[in-house]
Image (cartoon, rainbow, N blue to C red; front, top):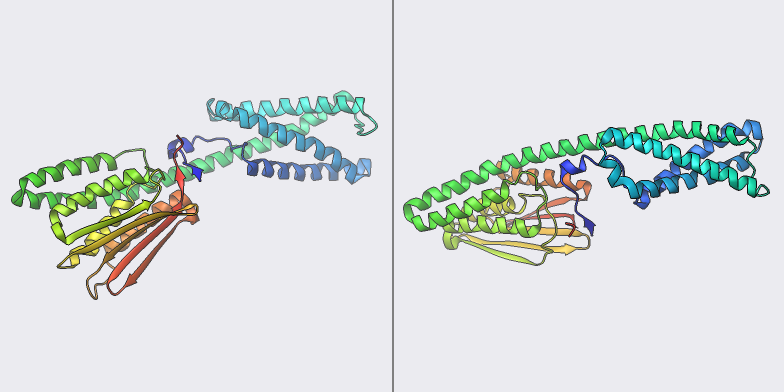
Length: 353
């Protein structure tokens, strides 16, 4: 189980990677070792002993990476609160200070335990050489982090724009169907029409939240239940819905407007085509670290399942899931002569409490 991602706008302000994560530390050590090999190769011509140079340089750079990772792990939130330019400027200064302190410590230990480790340079020359090398490498590293943060920010903003555009395709269609239902009820049952208007108002309030792109499954189910009540008023006993969701973790996150459009598709492309209506089965469970949601509805004999609206809705939902979770998402459709089933699977994530 993983923690939920922040809103896209907040994610786009994450300038530095998570230095508390083992993967980030491992990549840093790997990069440092490559630098150590390059420095040792450059020094081989003067010392004549590649392995000795590599061991001394590796010891220095590994300690530097571990200390730098620990420092940035503790100071990341404070650094990013300074703003982008200040974050990288202060980060560079901190890295240079750490390099000088580590160089001074190394020289002191060499002077104290010279039999085990030898630094042939003079004190000042060693400090200046370390400062110059670390300045070049740290500047390149901070430049890489800056470019990486800009790339990550552009990807997240593009994803946000795509999500908003895809959701905009759903809302007018949903509103159109709901208003048609209410219009028909005003002539036959004004009291039920009033109840439907109240449900529609609640639905719009829930669906038009500007920044909440990852509500909980419980919230999405509440939205779907409101929609079901509206459709029940229109279709009556022709519509039956079975919610088999006892094993579904209700605190899990899901991209907004996922469950309701799938229920709408099951009703519109399944139940409405049957004179006697039918049963829509909505089931859900936690399968390992994946959430599985399945929507199954009956269809009229020989009814084509390639309706444009059906395909557009599924493609819409699949795109939004892929934007949120990448390749870890699957959307599978199963058809039989008398039924139609859609199964979506995506990673289990919950909000921090």
